[in-house]
Length: 187
Ligand SMILES: CC(C)(COP(=O)(O)OP(=O)(O)OC[C@H]1O[C@@H](n2cnc3c(N)ncnc32)[C@H](O)[C@@H]1OP(=O)(O)O)[C@@H](O)C(=O)NCCC(=O)NCCS
Image (cartoon, rainbow, N blue to C red):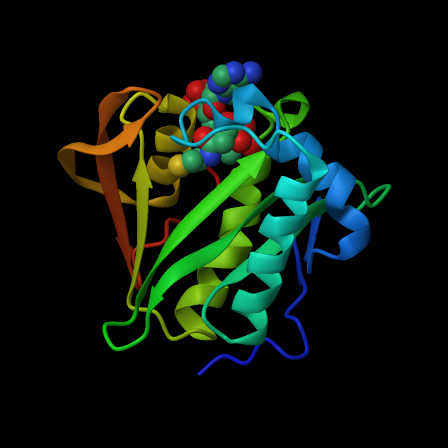
């Protein structure tokens, strides 16, 4: 079973995925407070640095307790923190976890999250011994759906009105990727 100590730093051609640190909190706040980033996530944007500090504390506790892992996504060139992503809701007996991710809008449309997930997913299958990775998203979140489809995820269904936020119920699309289904790069 995976140990997250030392923290597993992952690298890709353009990116370095590393642990989030207290010094990242302002940058994390920029990501988590951006309404474009939270638009389809069914939660309010962070409204203060304290909200992002709280998120950082939850992320750190998950890593310490070996129950979830989130990476800070940085550019190899310059080291700037531009996003985050990782596995949570890790169901160890049944060997699956849910994946989540977000990127500053200035970096959208360059295949960056696809590249980051191509490093995180093999880590999940190999080091965390996952059999299945699940993604849950707002059915209107086309950008996220495209990323998942390109990686080989199957859209398995749609839960009806299981999320209540901001005065309305929304559906959740469920995507799954089984061990061995990760699509090779180039598409
Ligand atoms: C989902 C997200 C991570 C995608 O990251 P990305 O690095 O831009 O992904 P890609 O470059 O591989 O692009 C994927 C799709 O995004 C869409 N996209 C690209 N640029 C976009 C833009 N400026 N505005 C809206 N959509 C855009 C395109 O449909 C693209 O698909 P295509 O290549 O078939 O045209 C990013 O849009 C994001 O952070 N969104 C907000 C957070 C979020 O929704 N997270 C997922 C919750 S389930």
